[in-house]
Image 1 (tube, each protein chain N blue to C red):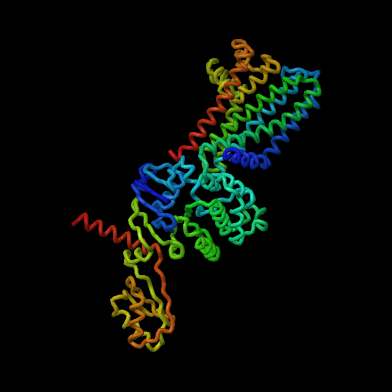
Image 2 (cartoon, helix red, strand yellow):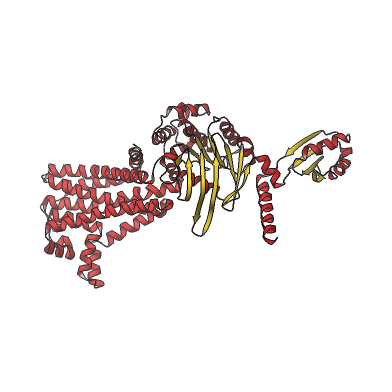
Length: 271
Length: 311
C-alpha cells in the first residue's frame, strides 16, 4: 500500500512535468518524420528500407531517452531534499527502502509510458508500412530497458546530491560522457590514444548507450559500416546472439547497480 | 510514552548527544530548550528515525530509529519550516492519511476546526497557503491520525505574531492525553504550552523541571516597570534600591522606573512601595528572555564545575 501510494505520487508528479511532453513529442515527431518522409529505396548509413527508418528512430532514442529518464530521476530525491519535503515524508510510517522503491518505480513507469507513447506511435506507422511487428516490439523493449537503466543511474545520482541543480549537472555530465564515449569516441581512443582493442571491446559493453546501440543494430541489420570497428570485431568474434545478450546484460547490470548503489547511498545518513 | 536511554549521536568527531536519558509520560507537554547547536533538532530527528544513533529510544513501546516505522506511526511531526509539496491541500491530506493507513475525514474535520474548511482550501495548492495555515494543516493531519505523540520543532519560529498566537491557541486545545515534545526558543511558547522543561547542553539533559524552577535555578529574576507620581519617583528609586529583592532600579526617562529583580522579587518590590505610601499608578512585569535564563543557568553550571575541578 505504502509503496503503491508513493509510486502513484511519483508517477503523477513525473507525468505533470513538461519535460515528458517535450521529449515524448520529440520521439513522436522525429520518429514519424523518419517513417513518413524517409526514402526506402535509398541506402543511408548502410541500412535499407524499414530497417533504415527504425535505425533512425533508434539513433533518436539513443539521444532522447537517456535525457528523458535522467531529468526526472535526478530530481526525484535531490529535489525533495532541497525543498525540505523529503524529511517530512520520511517522518511518516514509511521506510527509506519503500520511499526509494516508490521513487524508482514511479519515475520508471513514467519514463516507460513516455517511451511507449513516443515509440508506439512511430511503431504503428512502421508496422502499417510493412515493418515486421516483432522487430518493432524488440526495439521498443530495448529502448524501455535503456530508459529504466538511466532512471537507475539518475536516482543513484539523486541519492548522492542535495540540490536539483547539482544533480541535473551531474546527470548531464553522465549523459554527455556516455554519448561521447560511444562508437566515435571508441574509434578516436583506438586511433588517437592507442587504447588496446580488448579494452575498447569491454568498454563497448560497459557503456549502456553503446550497448543499446550494438544490440539494436545487431537485431536490425548488422553491418560492419554501422556497427563500427569495435562492434564489427565483437560481432565476428561473439556472433549475433551472444552480442545481443551481452549488451542487454550490460543494460540490466547498470539498472541493478544504479538501484543498489542508490538505495545504499539513500540509506547512508541513518547508518 | 517516550523512553530514551543512553542516546548518543555524533557527526564525525563532533558529539552532539552523549548518553542522553529522558522519560516522558503520557499527556506531558515538554519544552526542549538549548542553545543553538545543543542538539534539540537532533533529538527530534532521532525520535523520528531520520538519522541513525546509538542507545535505546522507544515511543509508546515501539522501538524508534530508521527502521522504526511503527514508532513513526505514533508520532505526528510539525517541522520548523513546513514542507511545501507540489500538490493541493486535499491531495496532501489524502496521500499522507493513506501513508498512515488512516481515514482522511478526521483530518479534514480538524482543518475545519482550525478555520481552514476543506471546501475553501482543499483545492488550493500548498504553496498558496501561509506559514501558519501550513502548520495548522500538518497539525490537523497528525491529530486526525490519532497519534499519541506530537513532535514540534520550533513550530512558531517562522510565523508572524498573529499566526503564532493562533497556532499556540490551537495547540493549547489539543487533547490532554496526547504527549507533546517541542523544541523552542520562545518563552511565550513555553509559558503557554509546557508543563515541563528540559535543557540540553553538552550532549545531555542538564535541567529537568518546571519553567518556574528554571528561573529560580538560573537566578534571573526578571524586570518590573513601575509608574509612580513624578514627585515621588526619586524617592521610589532610592527605596527600591534598598530592597534585597531588587538588583537595580533607575528612572527610564519616560516617567517610569525599570526595576531589575532577584527571583521572586516582584511582589516584595511592589509591597515596599505600597507600605511607604507610594502610589503605584501602573506596572508591568517584563519577562526575561529565555536565552538569558539559559545563559545564566549554563554559566552557573560551568562556574560550579570549575570550582569542583579546582577545589
